[in-house]
Image 1 (cartoon, rainbow, N blue to C red):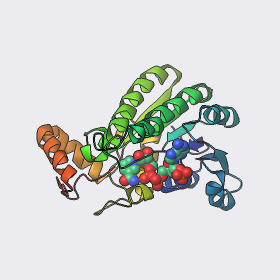
Image 2: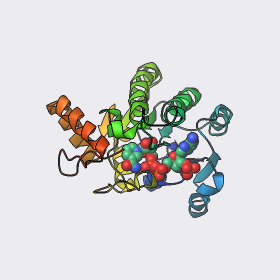
Image 3: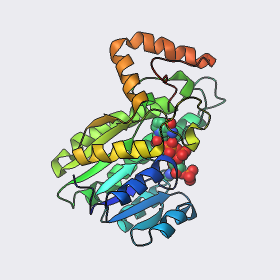
Length: 258
Ligand SMILES: NC(=O)c1ccc[n+]([C@@H]2O[C@H](COP(=O)([O-])OP(=O)(O)OC[C@H]3O[C@@H](n4cnc5c(N)ncnc54)[C@H](OP(=O)(O)O)[C@@H]3O)[C@@H](O)[C@H]2O)c1
């Protein structure tokens, strides 16, 4: 679909990959970009820089009232980017309780699903529309060191496939973006090569424009998928070794991504 003159909403658009999406949409000629932010003041710099085209929206995707309100306020959205995400850095068994794993499911699965549900009728008003879900290489290979994050991104990927089927009739294309390792606050603990957020946004916009079902946005995601296809058991064992802090390398950079 055409990005030019589209109206986009990016969740967690105030920083990191989300902010890069906002800037990429502006650069590509989007008519308006809604920046979803838990604290609206965190999006003020984007509004200030582009007052005619950027609108900040208070949006915690785990808050049903805010999600519904956003769908009412942003009633002209033609492209929804479910970018907001949480990596709690807790193990599944080693964590003291289930609160981290539950929070990751809320933000990485139920939040994007509730956004898809709330915005489906908004997107249906357009001849063509799109949803892009920002997922992870940890959503195509289970990474024990990531605790509940990896399962939540697997769930997000399955949800993406199901929503794609449900929204096909209204011509809303639904894209899964499989992301490797990116230089943002979420990956501040990660050593080694990290993509700039702008590279992920560029790949994401290209995927949306093409209406792709699923795209690996960067080298690490491509590398993980290739290793999965080549020898899934060897990759599982490599991921197991990462639990003991070993830096796992399966290719040029190794799958330490989120
Ligand atoms: N960085 C990586 O290496 C990497 C790799 C693969 C996939 N990803 C995915 O890329 C996406 C963006 O991550 P990032 O790297 O840009 O991380 P980030 O810099 O930590 O940014 C996360 C964004 O999500 C927002 N957010 C968190 N919980 C939210 C909630 N309940 N409601 C609304 N917004 C919420 C944050 O808002 P606040 O500013 O209010 O905290 C922030 O804007 C995530 O889905 C992540 O899983 C990242």
